[in-house]
Image: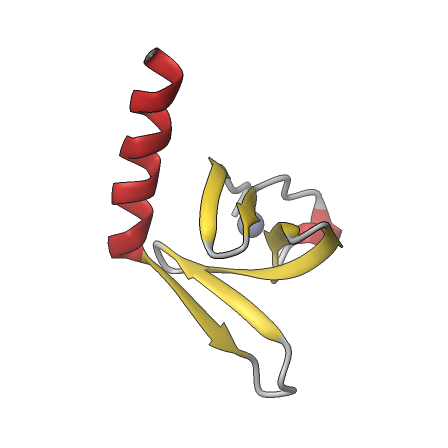
Length: 79
Ligand SMILES: [Zn+2]
């Protein structure tokens, strides 16, 4: 039950603050609270998005989605 509530809260939260975009090079980007995430890994319509600006500089923030639904948000950046 707790899990469902958490998921629902994340989902409601995200549906307001999260947008899908295309980068200047045409790659899919996900924007969340001023940060952008790029697609890192896709498997069975599950996508892991990582910080698009600092993932190579030790930033471990990520978002996981299934189709267009968020399942995990870890929006903790080191910048
Ligand atoms: Zn970051």
